[in-house]
Length: 320
Image 1 (cartoon, helix red, strand yellow):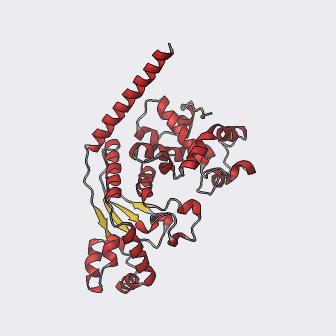
Image 2: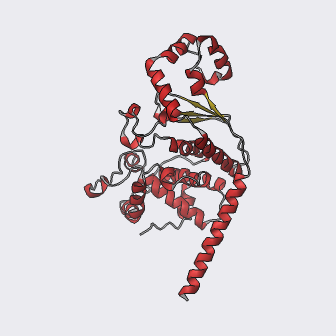
Image 3: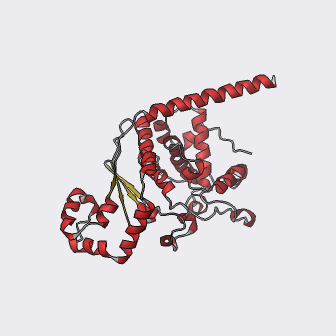
């Protein structure tokens, strides 16, 4: 009996893997053509005589409130020159990142046929790490100076829990997250559970459109942090339920369990210092995964499903 059960499990896994490989092959065959426009390099080497030509090609990259003299001075500024050099050295070869972006766009086209690939433009932003990626219907702007490596000297004043993800491996993850925000519709966020499900949707979206990234990369954890969350999933869930936090509207809970932070705040000394931040997002991710496993729902439909429907129909049970 045990041997039969084992054979059935192996057969199911084999069929699942085959179906997954077939799907990924179909998605890859979409083969969207993308070109990375290195505006950062063009701007860094622009001379005053050529500035009007660059402004004509990229008008949206130049604020009209600044005169040409401002941009010319910026190109020659000592700190800007250091920034340009750092980006040029780190991103001598953009091929691997371009392939990841191409795969992301193929997945977006598969799940959202109305998706039209934008112009992908790289720039620098004075290390504005809060706005690393900006997308519109027609362009996607990537600030490469926010991806120079977690230990880069430019990030000395940035908290470690943020700077650890300022590396080139996270570019496609951040771009996928920007598109997740575009496609998700969710009503007013009132409770902790609302926030958990919203970010759970984001993370599940990334599961689907960037499967080539690890789960740790998708949530922005180290492997050790993800392992901690998995090992303590049952405890985290019990903590939320027993303290009746799920349906609480206390805004302080966002800082404790949702927003970026060095650790989550259970107010328990033996746990807080070991925990990663944003554990509310992590649990929301697991709830959405459970919902998708239990229900025959498309990605597009899930992204607009209410918190209540997802929670009530997820049959979520934490790992023990």
